[in-house]
Length: 298
Ligand SMILES: *[C@@H]1O[C@H](CO)[C@@H](O)[C@H](O)[C@H]1NC(C)=O
Ligand SMILES: *[C@@H]1O[C@H](CO)[C@@H](O)[C@H](O)[C@H]1NC(C)=O
Image 1 (spheres, rainbow, N blue to C red):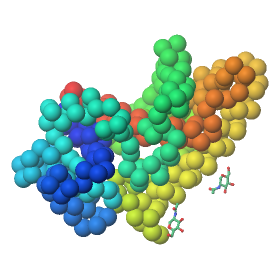
Image 2: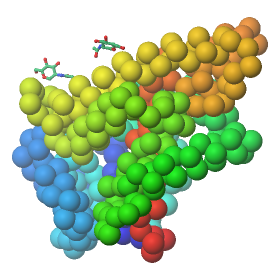
Image 3: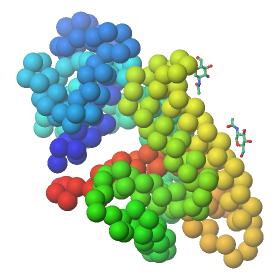
């Protein structure tokens, strides 16, 4: 429950784009923007690490009321809370409120992922992702997942007196993601990908300063490496698909590559494949591993 609350309050409503021209100081919500760039990010990150983010947000609400401004991850942000706020977020059209990730996240995930696209482009990519998630296709993934789970249990659980569940669930979900999204078998390549991915995720919740040796800089580098590997994989999958008898839905990359228009041309370009693979990987990782770790999650 708490986790869900935090994810919803953080990810959906905060990036509220106030329309320009209404910038009279009277209409700006209470609250300070804090130190430039850093803003309140450190406070929030500290609270998240200590698992007290909900309390931190409640305190804000006590001080400033349900609407306040602050600065997160390098951007002025409006925090809104409550029933009316939810209604506003979920019923506004794109002229009032648009869905957009912070610039820092956009740089990591790319600007052609589903979260950034609109209109026809959005539909085209969403349809291709939908093919991957069709019930008929899902059936064929069960076998692969089963194989990964068995191998995981044999490797990390059997014969152990005590195990730390959350990190192991992260490993397991990542391995399943690798198998289903990338079609990468176990081995050196997958391990490299795990390292890069973890590096990238760390920078997603960090202060977005791109200087040598900052966490965000390492995160950008990791993102570039993942892209580079995905590019190679796209080439390999394309060659594989050219052979007859290959199942075009066996992983997400193959599935997107084999989405064709009436002239048999690829519908989703390489950048879109890369960005959306990154998106699905990120979206699937933390949520699923937390979900299967918490028995009382509701
Ligand atoms: C990391 O920082 C250095 C120095 O500012 C910069 O040259 C490099 O491009 C950055 N890395 C990435 C991936 O942006
Ligand atoms: C991209 O991957 C290839 C190997 O597949 C490697 O030779 C090359 O150095 C990589 N480039 C970058 C920028 O990481």
